[in-house]
Image (cartoon, rainbow, N blue to C red; front, top):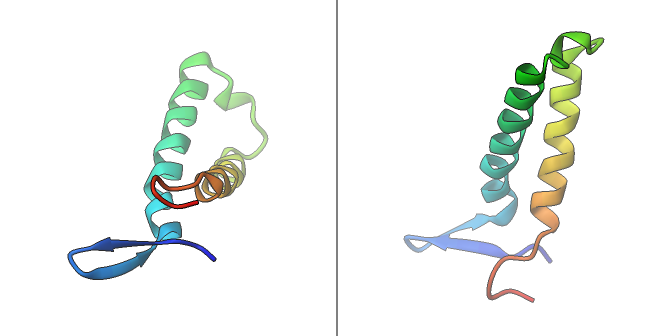
Length: 69
């Protein structure tokens, strides 16, 4: 079962909290690729960024929250 976060008495899915983490990771990797010049050698940069977001979102969801087993 996916744990939930309580914010102000309202329960939110932990998957929703993982989205900003994944987005921050994508922005960081995108900046790094652009800085190194590797971004322009990609065939379809938007597809790479979308797949990277899905991968990082999966990683962020699989990391256990503090206080939850």
